[in-house]
Image 1 (tube, rainbow, N blue to C red):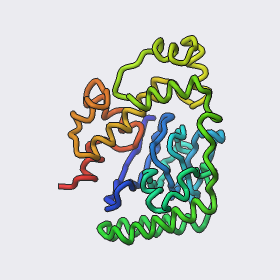
Image 2 (image 1 turned 90 degrees about the vertical axis):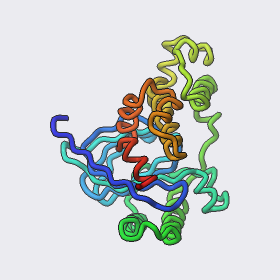
Image 3 (image 1 turned 90 degrees about the horizontal axis):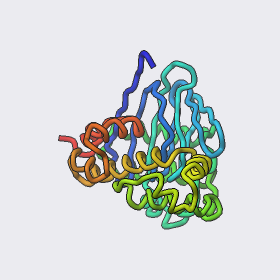
Length: 270
């Protein structure tokens, strides 16, 4: 894109397990997934994404959602930038807030026209901008938002054994368990009991991405976790399996929308 526009504001939330950011961008994001639940609000423009439900368009005022492990991508509708707020909730935080009530639930639709959720998202981000140190109020806003989201749009998550072929589930588990370890297509194909060609086709058909792209995004998530735990960028890059820090930075920025250095500064302001 000749005139790329991409600006990210990361907010300190004071709540462990909650990440908040606002974005203005005309950038297209590749297929990836998160370990967290995501709830967003399109503030301006339009956003088009691929999901398990097929192609999804969201316009100004719409709520967008993503579940842990759910493959998706994102691009602007047309050539103009879109602006959106985004919240990511660790599953552990969801369990704490609801005392386990929604641990087997997912948000059923990737795009919603819901005036209540729109108001709750707006109030939460207004508070984050005005009083980010008031963690109690942030938690209360989160409780209201999540309660409305899951009670109005939640559904039960199907068992992985029913939704993903066993062979592909084994390969994905290998990549999830050791994203820092190198892998070959031959190794993964042997694990699945498939030819390399069959593995590529089945993996992409099931998860919407290739094994290499999936491994790369798992490494990004591992690096993000290491950075949040206080590791330096170079330490996180090495431990997550990247060849060097610049490789991690490119993948991190492409997938999450902001460079790892800015992410670290938002978590540990000077």
